Length: 397
Image 1 (cartoon, helix red, strand yellow):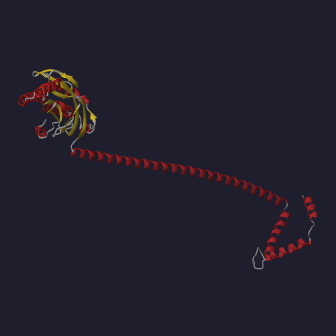
Image 2 (spheres, helix red, strand yellow; image 1 turned 180 degrees about the vertical axis):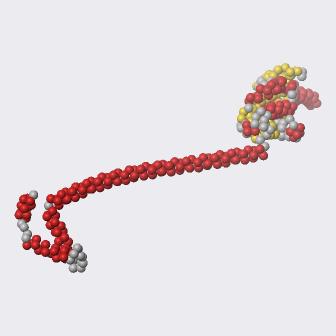
Image 3 (cartoon, one colour; image 1 turned 30 degrees about the vertical axis):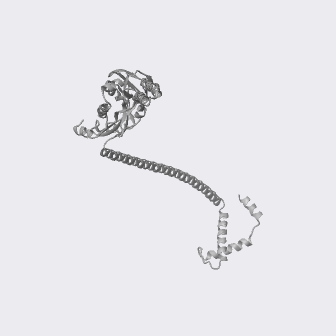
């Protein structure tokens, strides 16, 4: 322990245990009542060691003497008789109560005879000779004991503040009473517990200190009970009720945790942005693939249409070629009929133009118009019946 810490601890009174003197009849109440300093008594010393009721014995003696004196002075033998009758009764009552000893629940009593220890008795009503004296009453309940620890260094040299609640039990009242007093045991227990806790805190880090709150550290009971065995005391349980590094360290830790949290949030936001970008890229790629597929389909359809159009044009060309070939064959075979047909076409054109008074058209030479009208008249005059024409055509064929 540092000298500064030792001087600081000396200025603070951590004592919590005490022993008091009360009448044996008030022991049950005294064990559950703290004194004006808040200390809890664990040992009671009876204020009256001899259990004979002195008030009854003195009353009996005074009554006997007073009765005798009054009877002689007043010449009343009855008073003397009453004094001899009542005084023994009071004397017997005072002596009889000396044989009755009541030990309250939750305590044990030490019996002595002539200043030497005889035995320890349990709670309840006991009949004992007057020469057996109840010297001490020791509580048997589990006693809580608070051990604060200020600026205990951790393994990473951070000074932590610890508040620990120890619970102990006096299993051997004789060893406890005759080896140490309650106030001295308070100091011994405080020092031993603090040293053990400091050694334990030295083995952990500041981050582990913050996890000690409401923790039970019973693994350090064995060395503590080894030190307490000589006093007949056993430590039952150890619970840390408060554990925290200094405020400046806590603020730095909070700032560090906040920075880590912000960094994690930033990394999460970046990961989300990257994931969104990847999703957008994947969507764009899918759209490009879909567009390529559509373009391929459109190109395929265009090619198919072009192929169909080519085939149609080839078919039309072949049809036209066939038609022209047939027509050329007919012209070659029937030149006179083709000439007449041509003249008919010209005649129809001329007739259409003749019906339009506003049309001005010259086809070939001027004599062609006159010749067209002449041909029309000739055709009308020399019209051949259809049947004859067909006969001629068949003959010609």
